[in-house]
Length: 217
View 1: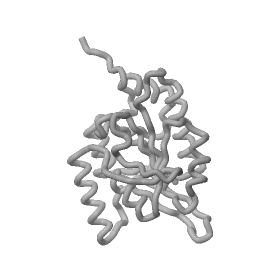
View 2 (view 1 turned 60 degrees about the vertical axis):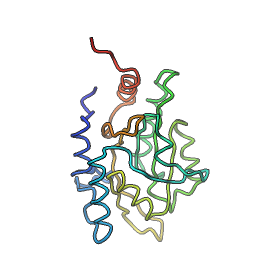
View 3 (view 1 turned 30 degrees about the vertical axis):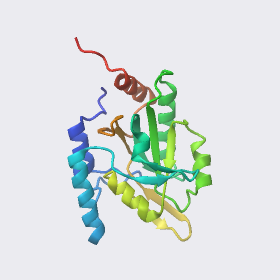
View 4 (view 1 turned 120 degrees about the vertical axis):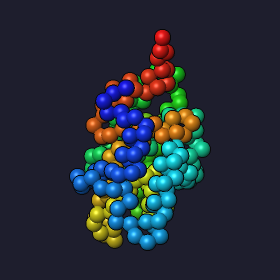
């Protein structure tokens, strides 16, 4: 394992009990901060369930072809989950390019690895836009989205939050979102957080070790 990999208990606590780092250089904040009323209660319930179960939550999003994607589509595979949007200037394309390079560096038999890019900008990330964006990266990377309210709930289900900054009516806005990936194992169990800045070589090495773990004497 590498220095950036956190053990399961610490990583889960870090994600769900306290901290989310945002792409817009915001300070570290609670993933459910600034949420009031029923949404706040729903967020606390989601976090409580995730802390107990420590596994991929139940969710449904729509991929660019209109097909529904759920947590069941990712069982049996190592899966990275990442929130973002296609207009993101740096964090999203960098992360997806790193994943692509890491996947390309894996052996031919490493088929049980995928990534899910959850677009939190359905207003601009229409199916054709999302499809064209995905074409720049590995075909092991799927993408899905939904209505703004649905994606807020989906992000909360994964213990994360995002903020729209600017005027959505004019289209002149950005989205602050977590710059970490969540890794789940083939049984849907949460494994670790992967922060920004990890190299493709580090990711590929870690994945090879997970797919073919070394036997201890």
